[in-house]
Image (cartoon, rainbow over all chains, first blue to last red; front, side):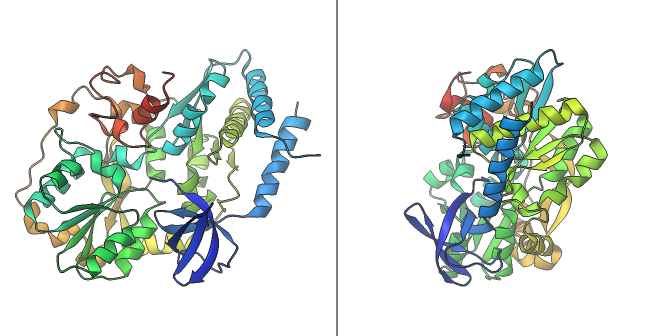
Length: 73
Length: 360
């Protein structure tokens, strides 16, 4: 139920957007998010974009991994 | 240096966890999301953990925790009112006395499976009949129901079986029976409520929590971080799923949810009545509340007990007290093809996931 799938915003016609999930395109509601742009990645749950995915934070997590595996003993 | 591969991450972290757990007392970590159970079982992560580290599954399946009383009311409504009833597919197979929404559909009742609540709203816009949608789900799903209600389509109502998840975490801790040392918090509930929603649990119960994503390496990293925190006695609240979860959560979603719903003391399967956990539709929106709109239909409604479920131990599975294979019905009388309890029905139910991937 709480399954959410990330996809890329392809076009916007507020309050809807076409989101591309690796080739499968679907119309989703985007009015739970502010300032969404074409090209943003969003998490979609039951037809709603519930959060923007942040690329910076993905990099941050990668840093945590390096710290955990390489420096912490 | 180059990015680490998933294999390197998992191998490395499993080794670190093993080292941390050498000579330790038993540590019990509970996850709270069906999708986490899916990751853990599908990738057999439990086999990578030492025997003194237990990974329990909690009440993180919205379909599973809906009590039979809600289900009976819905079945009563379908049989006694001339409506179109819409539901998510996962809910349509949950039986009461062996009969599910699919059964009633086969008997000619107008029951339709939808992917999104807006499919239900569209059905209402194009029909003269009243459309009732089965509102299920935790904070992840409630904002979508709230928006649908706020759209104000006249013949559209919601039968709310929504539950707030955070009160259930607190309730589980207050029961004390599952002896939980740490939580892997649900990733997608957290996208809505934010890290801030767990501060209260951190301050009051001093139980470490990690908000984790759904890849196997996410779960393993969360387990490692929890083991470290538990050993050090830290009441950590770590957001490992920061690519989707912000400290404040999704404020817009919280706002629409607060506008439409209010918290009431509602029953959960397995947990009983959990204070402030029910997503009741506010009086101000009672024209969209199926409980109010069809009040007359519910007048002669009487609760019954499902004798078939007497031996079903779904409730204890949801509380993290037993695993599916401890239930006498599991894969004998109760299978994914002919499920008795909801833990075997839902794709997020622990019994269903164990049945699917084997290894029990």
